[in-house]
Length: 466
Ligand SMILES: *Cc1c(COP(=O)(O)O)cnc(C)c1O
Image 1: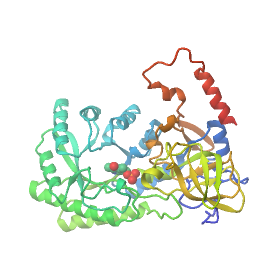
Image 2: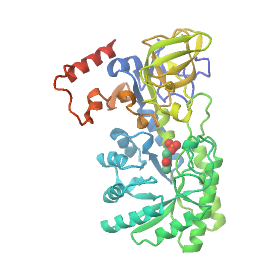
Image 3: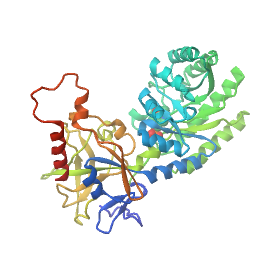
Image 4: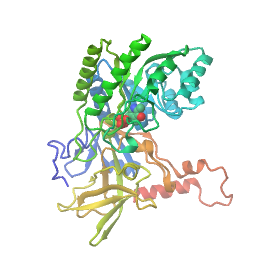
């Protein structure tokens, strides 16, 4: 499988694997200076292995490329306390879209001023929590929310800074479930239909709300700058109309996230430097033409910051050859830790990482352990011909929308997230246990139940050690 464009130094395909991923002399992969066989032995599989250096390098690149702009990390891609702290340390801002994500930020004292709160249906309780924490900006998404938020701000006796979410009518060329710029969808106020202009007027009329700018997010996993450019063009046009109608120049323009990453070696992601340069130049030029002060730009990368930092480490359990059809290689996770394949028909690749494997390759379907035939981790993956039970397989680009979208389908405990850096590994989200799964059950267990949780834990260890 390594015939496909091997990276010069690491022996790995470029763009696909975390920054510090290497193949050691014996063919075992290491990430952050830690061998994956050691990780599997200590922490079990499946596991998300997050390369801290990879994330921090991308954070630096984004901050430098968008130097005089606000870079918000989109927390929905992946969030936990340790990660929120890294985001803070790297000088990034954080966007959250639920009370739960806000709770993570609050629990590490994330600076409120650098938070942005999104969502098309934030509850009254969530709005209250955000205002109470003094979240820097709230993106309003409906007329009803403008009223609700104004009431919450009034009750708290503050003026809340607000952005208006605009639907700029741009079709991002991506899967319809993750495309959010076109007119017919649940997010934002339509630009073409006039709702955006009315929302602006409604916010301006509320004394408890301070309108600081406009916001758009056209979609995710985008590979060309044309969509971003068109959205920026239309948003600047709206800024000019707002100036003409209301006599105010809004100081901020947030263009959202959506930059794509490589999931297989066929994906060619854009350079953040190039995207930044083009967007900044375009907004500058259009503002000059309209006589507008250039607003402070905001961007909200999620996937592009964390997606490539992480690999999912699985252990192969069975190999089933169906003559004339295909070979199914089953691993010990699946749609509960990666729903993207089933949900978006996303493409992934995988690699045998616990030994070199035979030189001959076979194209297999990598499947999970769930009771559903759509439980595919990766279609058409070239793996060594001798792949067998006990092998470790790694799937790259699993940092964004994997752990954060993970489920307990089939009562499968969700995998841990293990941060690796400079030869050390640290669990930043622990593995769920069967006790965790049973904790929400309102009925007590049968008093005669014979297996104690300690015994269950023992049998788990035994499985892991096997
Ligand atoms: C999902 C989302 C993002 C992040 O998208 P990515 O594709 O992960 O960069 C940013 N902003 C908003 C409003 C979003 O909904």
